[in-house]
Amino acid sequence: MMLASTCVATWPLLAFGAQTTPKWHVGWGFEPHGGFPLMPAPWQNRYQMNQSAVGYFLGNASGMNSPDEVAAEARMGVVGLGWQLSNIPSHYSNLEWFELEEARRLKALRPDVKVMLTRETEVTSVFYNMSKEVMYSPVTQDYWMQCGGKPCVADWDSPAGNTDKYYFNFSNPRFVEWWVNDFVVGAAKNDLVDGIYFDCACEGAPGDNLDWAQMQIDRQRAFDRVLAELTSMGKWVSAWNDPDGSLDQGNCASQMRKWIAKGKDNKNTLQIAGPKTPTDQIIAAFLIARGPSAILNFPTLGCYGSATEYGWNPHMDEDFGGPLELAVETSENVFTRQWSKATISLDCKTFEASFTQHALNEFQTATVV
Image 1 (spheres, rainbow, N blue to C red):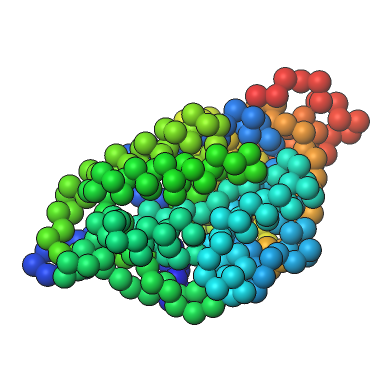
Image 2 (cartoon, helix red, strand yellow; image 1 turned 90 degrees about the horizontal axis):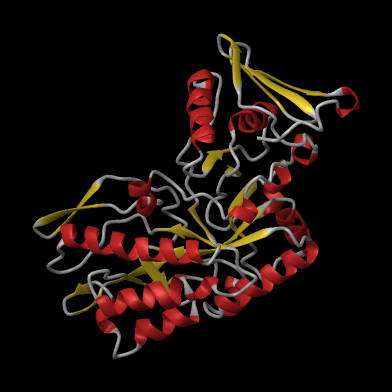
């Protein structure tokens, strides 16, 4: 989970006893698959920017989301609700109820919005009633990494105050069944939930006699089970990191070529990082490079993000139609793409973007690729 003091994932090694253990990092489970899976078929070809933007860890900690927050979240195509929902008044529990209530409110405001829930790959805490039950039950103490014959315990920082966090033991088959069937897949069975995005404490896993090599095998096997089951349910699965990076003038041309190749290949969802207020350049780059399955990610705002803190570019609400052809590098470092209602270009030499609407929408009858 994202802690107030450790919101950025890192990869150094930590020493536990006589062994060296690599830190977990966000998105680790997707790496053997080349990245995030493609979105479900009904999600693909949603080419409007207000269908193709995502924000993760959104929501109020001081109570249920305010009307302003719900409205700001609903401008996006995909909303990743955060674990902090109503954290302060709830006294660390009932998160499962708050998640569904916020999903219901979002869909009432905008029926086509996609709502994702966050679930952890390394630790859990008592915000989830299901976690609280197994953390303190005497018959499930072996679900967790053991320190001195007891579950290893650390602090999860929350707006309402610190809570216990317990570390997952993926080498315990009983735990794996709970994590897969109840904690992750079970949470996605509700029709209000469109997917799951993953987080980690991004720490080294503590524990006595830890066999890290076996843990890596066991955790990936469990993750792949979840990935397969959620995909078969028509849900999307992602994480809050940006495996495809962001854009600036220094990397513009090379990044565009990479993104265009990935969009054309269309084997994994393109997820790129945008700033708090998407610029013309990042929007143009996204529209030029993207394939049928692509997301522009707003930055994660610390640990308790509010979508009201995000800016909104007018191009996010503009209708460009759909792409008619693949991107073209028309001259050195100048990229362009024809859409049914506009020609979109990005000059990486000058770092200038253009959106030229077609007169009378003369290209609208062409076939969208």
